[in-house]
Image 1: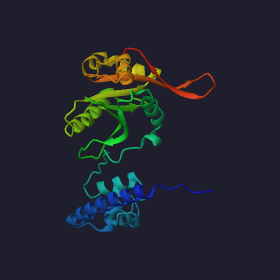
Image 2 (image 1 turned 30 degrees about the vertical axis):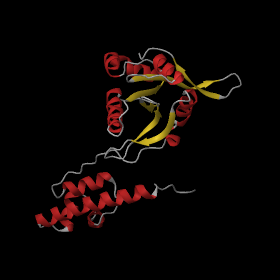
Image 3 (image 1 turned 90 degrees about the horizontal axis):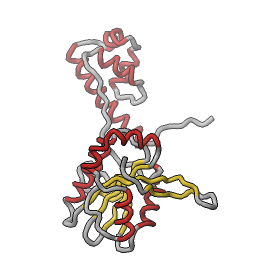
Image 4 (image 1 turned 60 degrees about the vertical axis):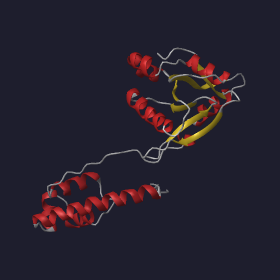
Length: 241
């Protein structure tokens, strides 16, 4: 049986984090004048395990790392922050993006995964460059927090706006599922203010090559079956909620 290992980049990142924490623990241990054995006894682990932690072994379990840190008066905190964006082809959003590109008027120039120029190196999923305005499409297949998703998308829009003189609009593209509808429903007031353009208005502007003139929410049904049984993407011409 083959053994699956994390990607090399992930292993390097884990090793770097473990080294930093190990260095902090060793500094705290030295400040307390505690021996390896004393730290091990307080953490209820073997002295060799304390040595592994201090030397930055990325394979040490998180609960063990926390126990050794607590034994020298430290608390381990792990936080995730924006990193490299998952490619559209890996996140399952590419089919939706291609559907929208197929719907677009010839006057629009489309581009996938466009860097917005922010400090985090983030990219917009799909951007249509029109004669008088630019429209970012952020594609969400499964929502978890509509407000946080909208804020993040607006930050991308604002970052791209700083690089262009034409107005930059935002379209939040959401897969039309019962779960997503239920998550969006309580935020109808937010959508009316922040994303007022409806699916019908967004599609009409995209297909006709006219200005959208504002931000909006577009519902799509990406797994609808066509007459010959092939998977197609379709849009829902309905109000946001």
